Length: 418
Picture 1 (cartoon, helix red, strand yellow):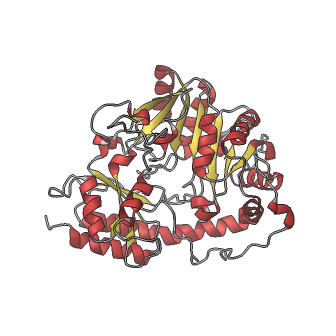
Picture 2 (cartoon, rainbow, N blue to C red):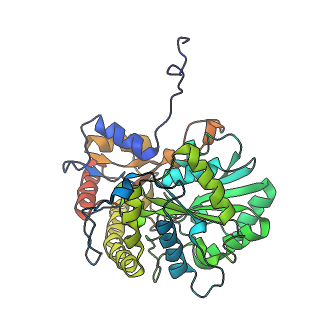
């Protein structure tokens, strides 16, 4: 290997996503998952223990010998049927076109579900938004058939992007697909109701595929809001170009199970499943079997209500405390369990996201610098990495309230008085 060559033998250096990067840096300073001396506001997972009013947590699994075999690449038929029925019960009532097992593909995790989807894309332009989920950067870099096209969202508009905006981008940039998280990680902006219906309508009109990452769809904070999905506005489940990705990770608070699904027209599911045949081979059979009762409608409603009660309190606490510390939270998040906060009014060097993160580590607090959400596939945009969002941090209220309070207390002590 030539001296100075960044490769590692035949391998290239592969960057870590934002959450993995910050926890790795924290681990180098002694952090271990579950260590009560640390407070992790960087975590991308919700608290997984009991919540008041929630269904009892599953603590053991009984395995049948048949579950030691490989599961089908597309998932067990029983789970696929259960996922389809979940969407029909919550989002398709009274509609003539309904999802079936053939509209569902199961995978071993959300990133893998998205990887299968983008691996199946053709030679198109794919629109993605800034800021958005950090893992999209490498996801949109490794497959060369499609071209990722960045769309910058305006802070002044609350990061909103309506149907007319979408139509203009699709037509003007010749987009064949659009990827977005909804609610958005990190801003918490939530596309719902007529606005979401408008997006689905534009996709139908332009034949542009919507790749909707709905992993935070049960974390909806507007008054009267419940679970939302683009599935509610699809007219024909086998013709409208809408691909939905979700799973147990956030909405059911079982991230360690690694059970997720893709819901889409049958032909798209066939393509996604074929991609899975060479990417991963399919999700674990025992976990798929154990997932089925979690999708029972009554149980889902209990879990959603419990999430709302517990997480609304933490949301308000984080937003209020951030503002008291001098951080700018333009608006409380409408969804997710994150607050997207600007450091612009803090004194140097605390007004820089990466510096803020490193100083917080000294206080045993983890957060995620905003620059990781400046998704730049293939590093095609020149200049300083993450320059647009270098004065932002993402604060998670995913941990239990006690851990959130500990983090906020330490950050308040860390930041000098203005």
